[in-house]
Amino acid sequence: MNFAVNLFADKDYYKESYEEILKSKPLKNYEDILGGILIVFGIVLLFIDANQVIGLFPYFFIGVGIYEFTKFHYSKYKWMKEISKSKLINITTQFEFDDEKILHTGSYSKGEIVWKALKSIKKTKKGLILRLENKNCIYIPLRNFDNQQQIEYLLNKNFN
Image (cartoon, rainbow, N blue to C red; front, side, top):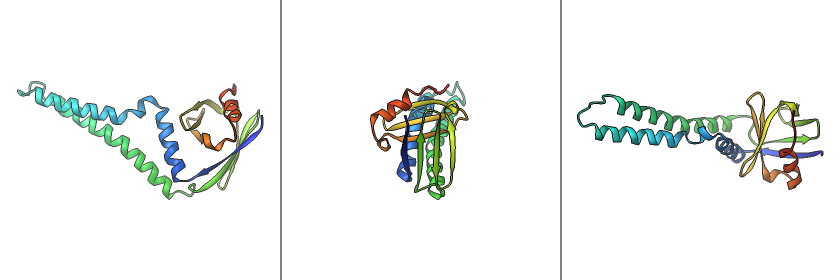
């Protein structure tokens, strides 16, 4: 099956892709919740340990919790800030899929990805995540596909 998908990468696309990729990583998705739990646990330990028998453990949990919570939110802020300054915003990239490879053509890149370079293709609520063997990934929103058969073709593709 041969087909093409055009992808316009604006701020909304990058925000959606960040959120969908994050949701596909189970541990990363819950870092802020883990941070909050550690903070609350540390505070509870402070109140329970009136005689300060356990020493600095409550402060350790609070500190790690603040770190995890801050890291989670700062990484998204930093990523979105870098993207907004990038030349890669508001450009269109075309992906052409066939039985042997994926061709990509855009304002700043042109190349091909053979199917063997893909590690997996995962469907999320809003799009497809194509994970490459080199740990990079490509996010394509479902709305960019012309029909369901194109999505099913990619999900059922054998890349070995």
